[in-house]
Image (cartoon, rainbow, N blue to C red; front, side):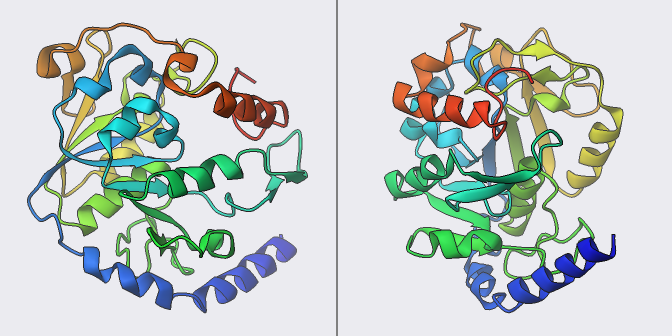
Length: 282
């Protein structure tokens, strides 16, 4: 425990010395005041609807969103890489059955997302700085040692970093967004839908996650959020609308290979074999 605490303290000091990089994000404060935006997570529900037919709005996405050809057509304004140390050629795999340093099998996919989408402004955790500093369309955020989970100042102590959804909602608040529609946020249903849009398997229903739902209620305070859900799913903890009734989209399941280039799926399956990402249930 002492060693872990010491390493954390050293890391906080090291990355704290880079905090000036986040000051550039002050230009985003209130930039979209009172606007409405779409926020896309990576949930498997996105396989069931033609999101390319949605009306265009200010759009946030995250992680692997932009390997989806439909999202590329959408040309989102902002994309977020939320985890630490993910863009380097090697990573320490913290999965309980691994716990070792490995070649990072998906870092090139993430780097290509930045390079191939120059009209999208990307944000990533400051810990990725030395793997990404060549990119001009990229900004950095970090908690800089303040881990309250309540700070959403992109130019300083951004502690709203518990999950990709928390990061995107925190950034939306910083930018002055008033109304948010959440797509592919499948853990917000009363019974979560498990599986990502890029996975090789059909999404399935999991057990209720009351602690997560309660946490997200706190995260959403101060901003109007609507969960977009399939008509056959419920989300009683949050305001919600359906793909069918609100957007006029009918379900039509599409496999991942219909949405993503096969060369990318091959790389992701290699990463899955090393338990770095999940393409099949573990």
